Amino acid sequence: SEEGLEVISKGSKYSFVMGEEDITISATLTDKVYENKTLSVNAVNGFNVTFKVGEKAVTEAKKGDTVNVFIENTTEDRRFKSLTSSDVTLNTVKEGEEYSFLMIDNNVTLALEDEAIPTHNLAFTGTNGMSAKFFYKGEEVTSGIEGKEITVKVTLEDKYAFDSLTST
View 1: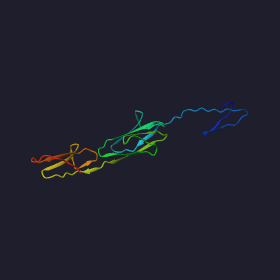
View 2: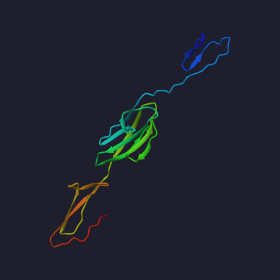
View 3: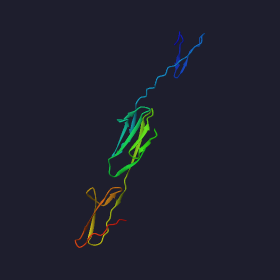
View 4: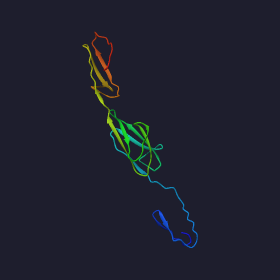
């Protein structure tokens, strides 16, 4: 207050009783200090999610921070399906692995969804005198996970020589 001028604050409104002289009102602003807000994502077995601001792993961020989200899949039989949020707009840096968003002044929750990688049965048809077994990482298998390398070991009787192998 200036020379007995009483300013009354009611939220964002200020009032005073006008005196007998001209009055100049001035205001001073300071930068708003934002508090950290929580970052969270649902737990999905076999997936690790890390939030980073700059190079630092975080669980909270302030409004205006660029938050990077890193997804690591540690499973053999599951794959990334989607990452969504109703709180922020996610920017794809590398599909299924890295995303970013601009932090808001509220807690942010992300939803990670995975799905099973399809498996397919393996069968061998050959003529008499030959047999085959299928292997994945050294273990005998009867089905294979889509996208994974399967080894076929063909065994021939001594009187035969290998000609070709085809798939259908």
